[in-house]
Structure formats: C-alpha cells, structure tokens
Length: 123
Image 1 (cartoon, rainbow, N blue to C red):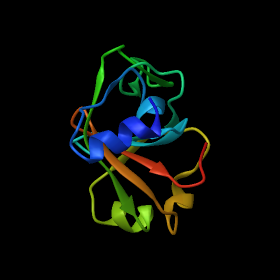
Image 2: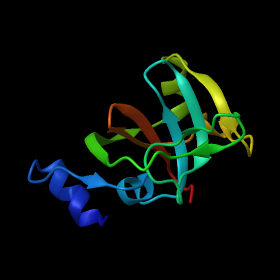
Image 3: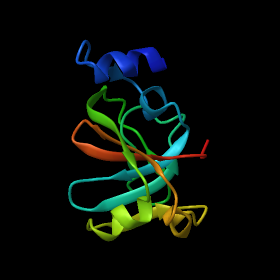
Image 4: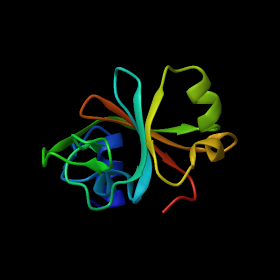
C-alpha cells in the first residue's frame, strides 16, 4: 500500500484494506495492542493478518484475515507516555524493545479494532 493511499484515507476518499501491517504503516515492526491489553512488540513484515501469539506462545503469527484501517495515522509524541495511560500486558518482545518506547515518537493506527503503533525510526 502506498503513502498516497494512506493520504486518500485521511481525506475520507477511500477505506484501506490490506493483507499486512507493513502495507498500512510502511514499517516492518512496531507495537500491537489488543482491546484486552495484550501487547506484542514484533516484526510484522511477513505476517498476513493481525499478529497474535501462536498456540504455544513462542512467536507471533497471522490468520490471513484482511485488515481494515479504521483510523489514523495519529501522531504520538511519546509512545511510552501514551502506554503509561493505557492498560497493557506484554506477551511478546523478542528484542527487548519495550524500554526504548519512552521518549520515542510514532504513529498510532486503529486497524480492524486493534491499536497499532509504528515508532519513528524503526524498520
């Protein structure tokens, strides 16, 4: 998905439907927070659908569902500060990136009812 298509959505001209979060955010990795607060910090580049933990709890996987951009992007000046005000429970953070989110700006999206945060400067 191109930046032009995201810009179209922001103007209300189109609703974006995509296969991956990479298509929506233009990034390979970031933060996914489900409504119950479960949070994954992961690389989603090759995950089709929303990243969720595999049945054994080892790694994120997708279910191949189509993703719909509900809202966003919204600029967040400090992701860590935003997280301080939202309930979350880290299920997956393979690289230990969680502490780096404080002071890090990014973009927040609502995708298929889930909060997705793409930190600035991440792949």
